[in-house]
Length: 634
Image 1: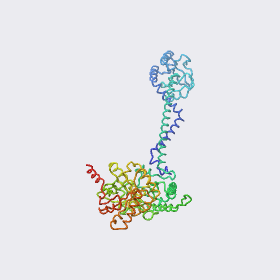
Image 2: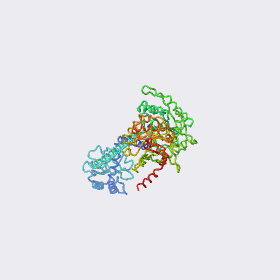
Image 3: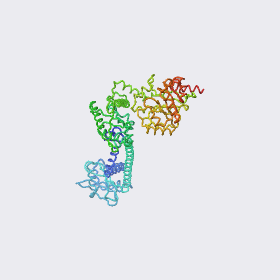
Image 4: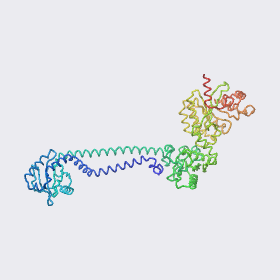
């Protein structure tokens, strides 16, 4: 079902299909030729013999013209004139050569063949003597067809083959018979055997080459199937979608993204191996509920892409099917470590796929609907509404990200005591024509979407380019705790660790932090030279647990505290305590929202080492600071 109906062997890999058919046809042809080889060998032998005597055939025509007087009856004249017979027999004798052993003339009378002329000196056939036939049928065939015949003399050891050629007469059947030597026949048959062997060797080589190529392509097909298909569930990996993106006619499908709700808890509680078993169990159940025209792709770890065929499926029936899948998964009891695990799925679906500009566009719309499903309580289905302005805005954000409109603005972080630049913070922006979209209009809209991690990857890659282009540049970038648990992001950072001294990691606030796993990632990054900072401490979800559980190098105080630093004694006490804690644990403190010199002096008095805010500079494009740097260098 997977390989034929789902993988569409005939449609997607038509070349392999044709290869198998060609190979099977060649094997059948080879077997057929081998079985019928004697018949074809005889036919080929006759063709070769016929071609070999074409040269002597013209000479025999001249001999016949010399023997036959067109004005007289040949048989009657030679029967009654012994001198003429002697003369004609001399002509026959002169016709013989090293390839011809004998030449004679016979005639047919009263259902018998008789000698008329014979040039042989030994075993001579006298006039009127009955001609004893080994191949009577061949002579009769020549008589009936009045055309030349070739007879292979298998029963006569010193003869190879015989040419029977009718002599044109009106009343009687008279034939010129020429016997060719065994040597002549052997030379022809040796050529025949060589030809047959050559043909057979050629066919064998063709068969072997076809076997090799078919095996090679089928092996590649098998490897690609293993690469594309999860052997435990029969579903596709995302690589299938990547490699066949252009071949999928997405307008023929309803597009659905499904995500296992709170799956991280399963991994945390039972481990990744058991988590994979849970995913496979869910995928098997969903897969079995689909039709052969549908496609099931494991889009992410616990995220699935369903392409439900519109063929013979109305919108209402599609919605019923999707609800059946949701309820089926909700009722599953999955056994792990003697526990029964219950799961739910959130779905985002896009029905009007025909209006999408591409498959990726259709998937984006399904992902936007999935986001809505999660934020409305999970374990539900949400359908993308092409008239919903909020959904359209999210689509616009995704399109801007996909079209490389993501940029970073940079804000300097200053060493307060020395009044010098320490480094820059890279701040996310999206360009929408002449407009700039800020993070507070981007990140909340895409939270819990797979695009969130895509943004983080793009920010890292954007800054890696800037750091490689300018070896004086030092920046910090913002990543969420979830980003630090993303293998792709960690791999990207580790791969580029040679510039770790100039790339700081600021951990953004998060709803829930798995401190053990995040700490493991932090320790890995620190081994490769990265410095870690807690961002926005004192607001949102950032709290004292971050300081107690995570190994950090910098602590950034949120602007809420800094704004009130000049008139709020409670803020003074908190900052003093935090600075003391950080100094004791070798953590450097950075203050945000430094808006004037008065705040700078207060911070210096508390022992805060670094500051960031409008007092020093607003966030600006990279080119702004790069130009300034060039002027300073000059």
